[in-house]
Image (cartoon, rainbow, N blue to C red; front, top):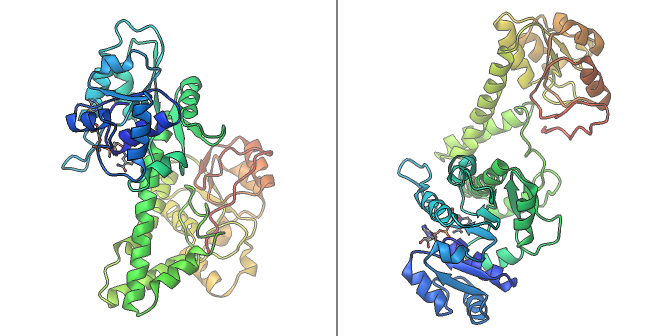
Length: 426
Ligand SMILES: NC(=O)c1ccc[n+]([C@@H]2O[C@H](COP(=O)([O-])OP(=O)(O)OC[C@H]3O[C@@H](n4cnc5c(N)ncnc54)[C@H](O)[C@@H]3O)[C@@H](O)[C@H]2O)c1
């Protein structure tokens, strides 16, 4: 175990508790002396007892020499710090040094060594910094094994992890590292090297986002003299749409008659209350940026463009604030040849604010709408998927062999594919 800070020390002790033989390496004499004396070098509930037990049992030891630690080792776990630089970038100094230390011990090694990076590092670091340090070392494999424990309940988090992720290019070393943690087979997420690195950032960003969201809703409730705890507890009671995987997969921008309107109202009322809620205020601009990226990709397409979907999601004919309408305006404005197919849109049967919205945005929409999918597929050189298609529609699109710009994350289009449910936000 390279690095005996909060993560490394807990991981070393808990792995020794799981009957592995662990040697910890750290240049910090305070940590080395404490562990050697069977004491925890810092306070963490339950850690002292485990260190005492495992050091006395001879399963956990420490040293300051990488070579000595690796003599008998099958796996080198790296838990060194990756602090922020002044500009927010990661300081990889400790990582580079420890990887160099490990590489310098390998000249006479003939047995395999797996180097597992547990430190939080930006995607690409293993490929750009760690793997090159072991170039020409056929015995060494590199995996990413990010840590998710929380200080204050780190031992319990280690024993009952919220997530166990191991990523790498070769399945053998990935499975070997996953097996270290003595969790039921199948519980670990075995992924690519870069996904394992990125998942840590995605998780921490999501946690931070949740805290900030709860606090902004709470602050607005306070200002309105309401009980924010009651509001958020009620929100958390919805396990179908709120505390669930709904709306969390990458896809197209949101739209429709509710979300944009309600977010605008929240931002407007908060501003009137002199309440700065940057997170809630930034949701619509973030959605606009996402739509802008999609429009740029659409504008880059050559030839005649067939768009699948016009409403803001499938199975509705509501066109109000549909991001597809904005995209069509941009394409038409730049002189692109476009036609649209949406199985639910019949211009003669939509009316009221819905009808006036679309006729106001694209007065000649009637001429662009193709009532038959097959006619659109014959006409188009290129498709844009702006709604998740029904299986039958997906099969026709796949059979057409037309290139598809998939804005909704529908994945591979095949008749037998299960198309995941859309982010059908109302
Ligand atoms: N602290 C947390 O709650 C937590 C949770 C998950 C992930 N992480 C990530 O885990 C990593 C480690 O975090 P931490 O809080 O344990 O850091 P830390 O600063 O407490 O510990 C890092 C340790 O690495 C040692 N070290 C530096 N260079 C070394 C070398 N060449 N050889 C051996 N040891 C060396 C340092 O002396 C120090 O003891 C970071 O990337 C962090 O982002 C931290």
